[in-house]
Length: 308
Image (tube, rainbow, N blue to C red; front, side, top):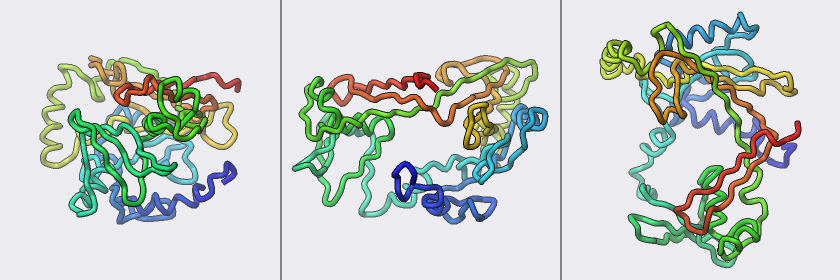
């Protein structure tokens, strides 16, 4: 509320988070039950994750069993949005219940190209389906939910954004809004990785094949074991020397080694710790590469440019 976002304080939004949740450990001050998103404890953790959590006392931190409370400083295991050992995404939690409604149509493999405007009001959206441009018109309202990257991109493609940038890309200016695409806040994350001699964790290695064969049966028949893991099983929150209002660093511990964020195989046993800056002061931008909707937006996170 101090920043002017009336109605978005912790106390204001907590009831909605609780209403969305079905917490298997039961309802309390910070958790809800009966909601579409099932939240549970992990059914399996690696011994490497166990060792990380048990190191809390050695490092001078407390062990926590729930980070979603008033005190989150310490190390522990993350809760997961899973139901019966399988991921319970928002699509699974919400859409599976609503997809048969007569007033809902879900289109996939469709790219939104721009919001249609008339006299300063959004009246629909232009999309590309299987190479063909179609237009859908709204009876009441258009809700844009493209995320931190695609929302400003789509607004600018629709003629809503900084006048100079839009005119430079040959886009007719519907509304000059200089703030569109500005003030991007991204969390800078560094990962420290080690290989290890212990044949534990989730390695891409011939020696791990027998455990994966067993894990296949465990998961297929009991929804337990290695394949029920979210990999980033453990982590925590700690305060840096610059913290002023509680923890400003978050950890994610992975009992595996990664190459290019998992895009390429990394062979062998090991583990890694992601260290994330939670409250970056630097501000970046989202801009247009061209006026063609298929061209990806230009993302400049502008990391580490704030003087602090």
